[in-house]
Each structure stands twice: as structure tokens, then as C-alpha cells.
Amino acid sequence: MPDVPHETRSPLCSLKSTALSGRVRVPGDKSISHRALIFGALATGRTRISGLLEGEDILRTAAALRAMGCPITNSSGEWEVLGRGVGGLQQPDGAVDFGNAGTGVRLMMGVIAGHDMVVRLTGDASLSRRPMGRVLKPLQQMGLEVLNGGQDKLPLDIRGTTDLIPIEYLLPVASAQIKSAVLIAGVHAAGETTVIEPEATRDHTERMLAHFGAHVAATKRQGLRAISVKGDAELVGSQVYVPGDPSSAAFLAAAALIVPGSEIIIENVLINPTRTGFYTTLREMGADIAFIDERNQGGEPVAEIRVRSAKLTGVQVPAARAPSMIDEYPILACLAAFADGETRMEGLAELRVKESDRLSATAAGLIANGVDARAESDALVVRGGKAVRGGGTVATHLDHRIAMAFLTLGLGADRPVVVDDAAMIATSFPDFVPAMENLGAKFAAPEPVQ
Ligand code: S3P
Image (tube, rainbow, N blue to C red; front, side, top):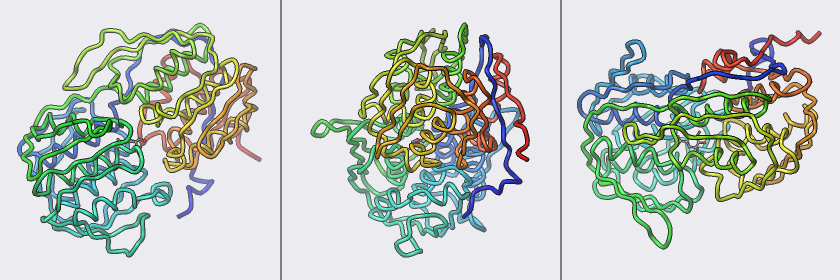
């Protein structure tokens, strides 16, 4: 499937800006938002969700659940899901299109696995390039059927069953999406399903399963984390508060660090330790960052994040930290262009199978803007500290985070930085540009190419 044709793209450019200041909110966490809708649909009774991300990825998950017979309404940002109970969804009439949303489609594969239904899953050009075999494989062990032979890319036709078999599964890659799909399927299976993870990944599924009343336990097995869920579960409708997304907040924090004299406060951000590797790395680089008023909100830790601009130094980011900041490497690499010396980020093979090949896209975007950067097979190296020239056009490859990272780079570059298509930003942070503008950041429509 081709990417978006040139004439329908929405290019945008960012301009060198002066000190950013103010308080800002980021939209609800994308991972928690998908899960809140899904567990709400699998529960009995009413689930109310405050702070849900109203980005396109999440709206796709809501539409998929509606198509499977689950009423979901939104009244001025207060969402309500009338759950159907575990195993209570119905076969949708047509294909279900997940757009750009990898998390949505992979988690929903776990849901479909536990239902006696055949579903055709589709997505946009980016999603249709991404590997699905990693999720299908354990689900097939449980009883899911894939009707398209050995195919592992969308479009896919899959058949679930009400007789799922519980399994014990050692994750071959550190992926919360695989873990979550298996645990969600496990909720429907007769018996206990266990996922063992070599490295801890985001734990929102475990937390939310417990919040909805499932029996879920995390133990250590030979030093690895094993998460078990009891099947034939009864989930009970609940209230969910979705905190601000730390992955979206990362762009604002980076902007404040890049633009001299800045000081901003990002309100109500999730600070779950499985998600804060980016902020740990910023501190190691010398950033002035504080988590203020740390508190618990509906089973997840949140805080205000205060960021002041600071002189940064390059660091080595260890591979072991990758799962806790996997979506933040493009923006960290852009920030590293302003830090003195070399920043080396390791263990990034997974970046090649995100919304785009983020290792290549990030290195190419930096080079196009005069930054000394290179992608290795699973590492990214940036040498920073000189003025960032800018003036380049970045190919975003239908990837929201590439678009936001490079628009942020442009706020500190000498010449404007153009991204070829800003449309995908709506998947995770629809108000990115106005939120940045409120802090003082400058954007413009790029000069048309003759
Ligand atoms: C997510 C897990 C991560 C992350 C994605 C959201 C989730 O993907 O990149 O944006 O909500 O479980 P992987 O599981 O593929 O690492």
C-alpha cells in the first residue's frame, strides 16, 4: 500500500523560538486509553472514563468495539462504555479498519481470539507494513485461527474460539503489546495464562486487569517477571482516570530544554516507572527536571513535570532502558543534537518496526538538518553541541512521533525545519501545535516547492 500521495499531505514547519513558558496539559495516555475501552467492553456494567485520549488511534479502538456490539458514548469528554462481559462481543458486519494503530489492532487480536467470530482486520499503509506474527503466534497456540495461510501482515482474517487454551509464553521480544494480547486472550481461556518477560515492559494491562477485578499476579521466575491471569474471568465495570501521556509530554519537555530561558510545567503526567526512562536519561544529560506533587490516580502514579532549559551533555543510553522509553528515541535523538558531545542509544532493534523504521527515519531527518548522526543496526549515534543548521525537509513516513520530534528540533534550529506531513500527529496528540504555540513555540506553513 503506498504512503499518502504528495497532494494530500499537510506539510508544516517550525521556526526558531524564544523562551517558552507556562503550564500545559497533554492528552490522555495512549496505552491506558486503549486498555480502558477494551476492559470496559469486556466488563459487565458501566465503565466511565475521564481523560481518554481522543486521538485517531483510540477512536479506531472505540469504533472496533462498537462494531462488535458494545455501546460507547462520549459526552463532553466523559466516556461511557456499556460492557458486554467477557466473551460477550459479536461478530462485526464488515472489515475493521485500525488506521495507524498498532496497539489497537494487536490488543484487539487478543479480544477476538476469545470469541466465536471471524474478523477481517485492516489498516493504513504504515500499519500494513508492521509484523503481526509476533502476536498471532502465541494466540494461535491458544486456539486462534489465521485464515490467510502464513501471512503476518494486514489485511488479515482471523477466527476466534470460545475454547481458548491457556498457555505459558516467554516473550521473544520486550513488547507490552504481545504481553497484553496474550493476557487479554487469557482472560477468556479456561485456566491460568502466564506471560514471562525477559525485560519489564509497561504494566498498564496488569494494573488495569486488577482494577477491573481480575485475578492477576506478578511473580519472579528465574529472575524474570511472570504475569499470570486467571481465565473465565469476571471483569466489573469501573471508573478509569487516564493520566497525561508521558510520551506526548516528552516533546514539550524537550522543547523547553532546547529553547534557552524556558520554564514550563506539564500537568498531570503519568510517571509509572515502566514509562519514565526518557526523564531518567534527561537528568543524566544535566536537565533541570522535577516531578512535583507525586500522587496516585486510579492505580497509576502521576505528577506535574517542571522543566527548565539547561546545558546538556551527551550520554550513553543503555539497551536495558529501551522498554521504558521505546517511543521517546526520536525526540531524544533530536535533543541530543543540542547536547555537547556524543549520545549513543543502544538496543533499538524494535524501533525498526514502529509506525515507521524510526532508526532510519530519525537519522535521515537529523542529517537533512545538518546534524552529525548515524543509525547502526540497532543503535543510534548523535554528535551534538554545534548550532543546529535546520533548513531540511523531513520524511515522516506516516509516523506521528517523527513529525513531532522534528517540529520540536526546529524550535532551536537556525533555519526552519519542515516535516512533509503533519497529519499523523492527530493519532496521538491532536492539539500538539496549539499546545506548543501556547507556550510560545512558532510554526508556519512551509514555502510551496516550485
Ligand atoms: C505499547 C507498547 C509499545 C509502544 C506502543 C504502545 C502499548 O509497543 O511502542 O506505542 O500500549 O502496549 P511494543 O509492545 O511493540 O514495544
